[in-house]
Amino acid sequence: MSRALGALLFVVWVLAAHDAGDTGSASAAALALGALGALILLPALGATRSRLRATLLLLAWWLLLALLLPHATATALPLSLPPVLLPLLLAWFFARTLRPGHEALITHFVRLSEGGERAAQPAVRCYTRRLTALWVLLLLALGLCAAVLDALRVPQGWLALLGVQSPWPLSMQAWNAWVNGWAYAVPVAALLLELALRRRLLPEAPRPHPLRFARALLGHWRKLRAP
Image (cartoon, rainbow, N blue to C red; front, side, top):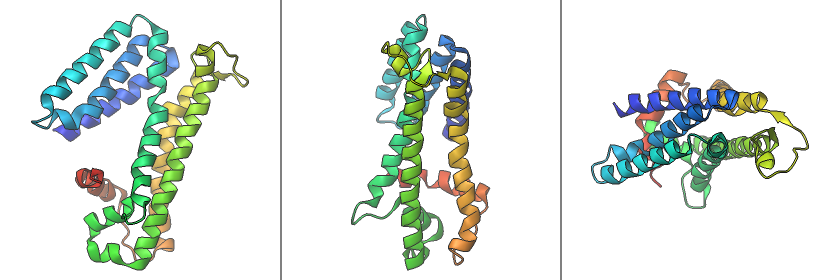
Protein backbone atom coordinates (compact mmCIF):
# COMPACT_ATOMS: atom_id res chain seq x y z
CA MET A 1 0.00 0.00 0.00
CA SER A 2 2.79 2.43 0.93
CA ARG A 3 4.57 1.75 -2.36
CA ALA A 4 1.40 2.42 -4.36
CA LEU A 5 0.74 5.60 -2.38
CA GLY A 6 4.37 6.67 -2.83
CA ALA A 7 4.11 6.12 -6.59
CA LEU A 8 0.87 8.13 -6.69
CA LEU A 9 2.40 11.00 -4.72
CA PHE A 10 5.44 11.02 -7.01
CA VAL A 11 3.22 11.22 -10.11
CA VAL A 12 1.19 14.06 -8.55
CA TRP A 13 4.41 15.87 -7.66
CA VAL A 14 5.87 15.59 -11.17
CA LEU A 15 2.68 16.56 -13.02
CA ALA A 16 1.77 19.43 -10.69
CA ALA A 17 5.35 20.77 -10.69
CA HIS A 18 5.42 20.66 -14.48
CA ASP A 19 2.10 22.54 -14.67
CA ALA A 20 3.29 25.12 -12.14
CA GLY A 21 6.55 25.67 -13.99
CA ASP A 22 4.78 26.01 -17.31
CA THR A 23 1.89 28.26 -16.23
CA GLY A 24 3.15 29.88 -13.03
CA SER A 25 0.05 28.60 -11.21
CA ALA A 26 0.35 29.05 -7.44
CA SER A 27 -2.26 26.36 -6.80
CA ALA A 28 -0.32 23.82 -8.90
CA ALA A 29 2.87 24.77 -7.05
CA ALA A 30 1.15 24.27 -3.69
CA LEU A 31 -0.20 20.89 -4.83
CA ALA A 32 3.27 19.80 -5.98
CA LEU A 33 4.91 20.87 -2.73
CA GLY A 34 2.14 19.27 -0.69
CA ALA A 35 2.59 15.96 -2.50
CA LEU A 36 6.37 16.16 -2.12
CA GLY A 37 6.04 16.77 1.62
CA ALA A 38 3.77 13.74 1.98
CA LEU A 39 6.18 11.65 -0.10
CA ILE A 40 9.15 12.59 2.08
CA LEU A 41 7.23 11.87 5.30
CA LEU A 42 5.60 8.69 4.03
CA PRO A 43 8.05 6.29 5.74
CA ALA A 44 7.57 8.11 9.07
CA LEU A 45 3.79 8.08 8.61
CA GLY A 46 3.91 4.31 8.27
CA ALA A 47 5.93 3.81 11.47
CA THR A 48 4.02 3.54 14.74
CA ARG A 49 6.52 5.52 16.84
CA SER A 50 6.82 8.50 14.52
CA ARG A 51 3.32 8.57 13.03
CA LEU A 52 1.88 11.30 15.25
CA ARG A 53 4.87 13.60 14.88
CA ALA A 54 5.00 13.08 11.11
CA THR A 55 1.27 13.71 10.79
CA LEU A 56 1.50 16.98 12.72
CA LEU A 57 4.50 18.05 10.65
CA LEU A 58 2.70 17.27 7.40
CA LEU A 59 -0.43 19.15 8.51
CA ALA A 60 1.70 22.15 9.45
CA TRP A 61 3.38 22.03 6.01
CA TRP A 62 0.01 21.88 4.24
CA LEU A 63 -1.26 24.80 6.37
CA LEU A 64 1.79 26.87 5.44
CA LEU A 65 1.21 26.13 1.74
CA ALA A 66 -2.44 27.14 2.09
CA LEU A 67 -1.37 30.47 3.62
CA LEU A 68 1.13 31.04 0.80
CA LEU A 69 -1.34 30.06 -1.92
CA PRO A 70 -2.55 33.62 -2.71
CA HIS A 71 1.04 34.70 -3.37
CA ALA A 72 2.50 33.15 -6.53
CA THR A 73 5.99 34.50 -5.79
CA ALA A 74 5.98 32.92 -2.32
CA THR A 75 5.47 29.46 -3.81
CA ALA A 76 7.91 30.01 -6.70
CA LEU A 77 11.04 29.82 -4.54
CA PRO A 78 10.09 26.63 -2.62
CA LEU A 79 9.14 24.97 -5.90
CA SER A 80 12.57 25.74 -7.36
CA LEU A 81 14.49 24.16 -4.47
CA PRO A 82 13.68 20.41 -4.89
CA PRO A 83 15.25 20.10 -8.39
CA VAL A 84 18.47 21.43 -6.85
CA LEU A 85 18.41 19.83 -3.40
CA LEU A 86 17.17 16.34 -4.29
CA PRO A 87 20.04 15.47 -6.68
CA LEU A 88 22.55 16.92 -4.21
CA LEU A 89 21.01 14.88 -1.39
CA LEU A 90 21.21 11.73 -3.49
CA ALA A 91 24.82 12.57 -4.39
CA TRP A 92 25.62 12.72 -0.67
CA PHE A 93 23.73 9.43 -0.17
CA PHE A 94 26.06 7.77 -2.69
CA ALA A 95 29.22 9.65 -1.69
CA ARG A 96 29.06 8.81 2.02
CA THR A 97 29.57 5.12 1.16
CA LEU A 98 32.87 5.88 -0.61
CA ARG A 99 34.62 6.82 2.63
CA PRO A 100 37.58 4.61 3.61
CA GLY A 101 36.45 1.51 5.43
CA HIS A 102 32.92 1.63 3.98
CA GLU A 103 31.33 -0.48 1.30
CA ALA A 104 30.25 1.44 -1.82
CA LEU A 105 26.48 1.76 -2.15
CA ILE A 106 26.23 -0.20 -5.41
CA THR A 107 28.52 -2.91 -4.00
CA HIS A 108 26.16 -3.15 -1.04
CA PHE A 109 23.20 -3.48 -3.41
CA VAL A 110 24.96 -6.32 -5.24
CA ARG A 111 25.56 -8.02 -1.87
CA LEU A 112 21.86 -7.76 -1.00
CA SER A 113 20.51 -8.80 -4.39
CA GLU A 114 23.11 -11.33 -5.63
CA GLY A 115 24.86 -12.52 -2.48
CA GLY A 116 28.08 -11.86 -0.62
CA GLU A 117 30.15 -14.14 -2.83
CA ARG A 118 29.35 -12.12 -5.92
CA ALA A 119 29.95 -8.79 -4.17
CA ALA A 120 33.32 -10.00 -2.86
CA GLN A 121 34.75 -10.66 -6.31
CA PRO A 122 37.60 -8.13 -6.92
CA ALA A 123 36.34 -7.18 -10.39
CA VAL A 124 32.80 -6.63 -9.10
CA ARG A 125 34.00 -4.59 -6.10
CA CYS A 126 36.16 -2.36 -8.30
CA TYR A 127 33.44 -1.89 -10.92
CA THR A 128 30.66 -1.11 -8.44
CA ARG A 129 32.83 1.32 -6.48
CA ARG A 130 33.73 3.22 -9.65
CA LEU A 131 30.09 3.16 -10.71
CA THR A 132 29.06 4.61 -7.36
CA ALA A 133 31.57 7.44 -7.86
CA LEU A 134 30.20 8.11 -11.35
CA TRP A 135 26.69 8.41 -9.95
CA VAL A 136 27.96 10.94 -7.43
CA LEU A 137 29.38 13.06 -10.25
CA LEU A 138 26.22 12.75 -12.37
CA LEU A 139 23.94 13.74 -9.49
CA LEU A 140 26.16 16.67 -8.55
CA ALA A 141 26.07 17.85 -12.17
CA LEU A 142 22.26 17.60 -12.24
CA GLY A 143 21.91 19.60 -9.04
CA LEU A 144 24.35 22.32 -10.10
CA CYS A 145 22.77 22.54 -13.56
CA ALA A 146 19.34 23.04 -12.00
CA ALA A 147 20.74 25.76 -9.72
CA VAL A 148 22.31 27.67 -12.62
CA LEU A 149 19.19 27.42 -14.78
CA ASP A 150 17.01 28.47 -11.87
CA ALA A 151 19.13 31.56 -11.32
CA LEU A 152 18.87 32.55 -14.99
CA ARG A 153 15.15 32.04 -15.60
CA VAL A 154 12.77 34.98 -15.84
CA PRO A 155 10.60 36.27 -14.30
CA GLN A 156 10.76 33.99 -11.22
CA GLY A 157 14.44 33.05 -11.17
CA TRP A 158 16.67 33.64 -8.16
CA LEU A 159 18.43 36.60 -9.80
CA ALA A 160 15.11 38.16 -10.81
CA LEU A 161 13.71 37.75 -7.28
CA LEU A 162 16.81 39.55 -5.98
CA GLY A 163 16.31 42.37 -8.48
CA VAL A 164 19.34 41.41 -10.59
CA GLN A 165 19.04 41.19 -14.37
CA SER A 166 19.77 37.73 -15.75
CA PRO A 167 22.83 37.79 -18.06
CA TRP A 168 21.27 35.02 -20.16
CA PRO A 169 17.50 35.22 -19.70
CA LEU A 170 15.90 31.78 -19.72
CA SER A 171 12.18 31.40 -20.31
CA MET A 172 10.03 29.61 -17.74
CA GLN A 173 9.11 27.04 -20.40
CA ALA A 174 12.75 26.20 -21.16
CA TRP A 175 13.57 25.93 -17.45
CA ASN A 176 10.51 23.77 -16.87
CA ALA A 177 11.40 21.45 -19.75
CA TRP A 178 14.70 20.67 -18.01
CA VAL A 179 13.87 20.47 -14.29
CA ASN A 180 10.53 18.70 -14.76
CA GLY A 181 11.41 16.71 -17.87
CA TRP A 182 14.95 16.04 -19.03
CA ALA A 183 16.33 16.06 -15.47
CA TYR A 184 14.32 12.86 -14.86
CA ALA A 185 15.19 11.35 -18.24
CA VAL A 186 18.96 11.71 -17.82
CA PRO A 187 19.34 9.38 -14.78
CA VAL A 188 17.00 6.81 -16.36
CA ALA A 189 19.00 6.91 -19.60
CA ALA A 190 22.26 6.61 -17.65
CA LEU A 191 20.92 3.58 -15.77
CA LEU A 192 19.75 1.84 -18.94
CA LEU A 193 23.05 2.64 -20.69
CA GLU A 194 25.03 1.15 -17.81
CA LEU A 195 22.93 -2.02 -17.81
CA ALA A 196 23.59 -2.36 -21.54
CA LEU A 197 27.33 -1.66 -21.29
CA ARG A 198 27.79 -4.00 -18.32
CA ARG A 199 27.93 -6.96 -20.72
CA ARG A 200 31.22 -5.63 -22.11
CA LEU A 201 32.64 -3.89 -19.05
CA LEU A 202 31.93 -6.73 -16.63
CA PRO A 203 31.27 -9.93 -18.61
CA GLU A 204 31.18 -12.16 -15.51
CA ALA A 205 28.28 -10.20 -13.98
CA PRO A 206 24.65 -11.25 -14.56
CA ARG A 207 22.57 -9.27 -17.03
CA PRO A 208 19.49 -8.13 -15.10
CA HIS A 209 16.37 -7.08 -16.93
CA PRO A 210 15.49 -3.43 -16.12
CA LEU A 211 12.16 -4.44 -14.55
CA ARG A 212 13.80 -7.10 -12.37
CA PHE A 213 16.45 -4.58 -11.40
CA ALA A 214 13.75 -2.06 -10.40
CA ARG A 215 11.93 -4.67 -8.29
CA ALA A 216 15.19 -5.63 -6.55
CA LEU A 217 15.97 -1.97 -5.86
CA LEU A 218 12.55 -1.38 -4.30
CA GLY A 219 12.78 -4.60 -2.34
CA HIS A 220 16.12 -3.69 -0.75
CA TRP A 221 15.57 0.07 -0.45
CA ARG A 222 15.20 0.10 3.34
CA LYS A 223 18.45 -1.82 3.82
CA LEU A 224 20.24 0.48 1.38
CA ARG A 225 19.15 3.53 3.37
CA ALA A 226 20.86 2.16 6.48
CA PRO A 227 24.38 3.61 7.01
